[in-house]
Amino acid sequence: MRNETIFPDVPLPEQLTYEFLGTFARSEYALKCSGFAKGSRKSVEADWDKFGTAIAWHFSRVKAEAFRECVDYLLNQPPRKQVIRDGHIGWQESAPDANLPRSQQTLLMVRRVRNNLFHGAKIWSPERSDDRDRDVRLVSSGLVVIKRCMALRGDVEDAFRFGVF
Image (tube, helix red, strand yellow):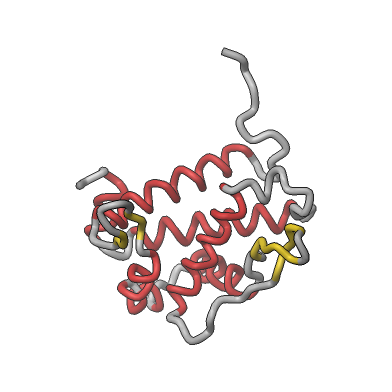
């Protein structure tokens, strides 16, 4: 087996990339196992919006300064959304809907961070950001938020930590 970098040219520390993607995957599993799932007999996915609504009260009462700073960063400096414009891939500013609970807005931004990273926009796209510090801060903030949100409900935390099904 050749020794090759899994994420060549990723503008993030490799360990941060692995930790974020692994944590996100565990979160999706935990949500589905805890009743935060949507779909049919043909497919299922984590229902992040339902979860965001369910934790809104607890989310708003988290006092940890690091968590609050990460939430503020994700909402005030949100990740851009990749779109097709005039037949070409580009980036679009896309703030979350201010009418949604803050928890739901924040988790939407975390999902966008994941989409930009996982689907290659932050690795291979010619339009990827040259602002490494911003990318690192977005991913790091998303990681802090995911971990804290998983702990806001015991059933989700158990599934996240122990793989309880």
